[in-house]
Amino acid sequence: MSHYLVELYTPNAAWHALSTEQRQQFLAAIGEAMGGLAQLGVQALTLTEIELGTDHGSGHRYLGIWRFPDAAAREALLAGIQASGWYTYFDHMNAAGAEGDFAQHLNALIAV
Image (cartoon, rainbow, N blue to C red):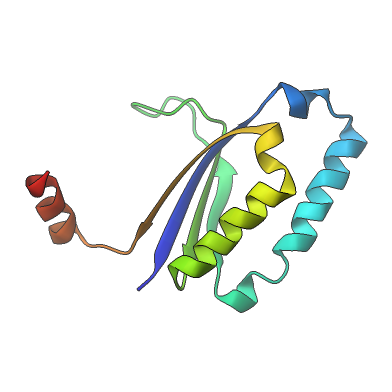
C-alpha cells in the first residue's frame, strides 16, 4: 500500500534574509541529501509553484506531493526535512496518509 505526503510551503523572512549564495548552498545540500531517495522507492510526484486564484487556496507558494512504498519511508523523509533546517526558512504544512479510494473515503466521511 502506498503512502503519501503533501507539502505546502512559502519562503519566510529568514529565507529572504539569506544571500543568493547562501540559498544556493542550502539547496545544494538538500539536493545531495535527496539523491538516494529513489533507491528507497520514494517518488516526488510533483514539486511546483501553486497556481494563484484556486478556489479556497491555501495561500502558500509551493506544493510538493510525494509517494512512498510504506509509512517508514515517509517518516524518514520527514525526519530528513526536519534535520535539514528546512522549517527555519519556510512556513510549511504537511498532510500525510495512506492510499485509499473514493468509496473508502465516502465511508470514512459518513462515519465521522
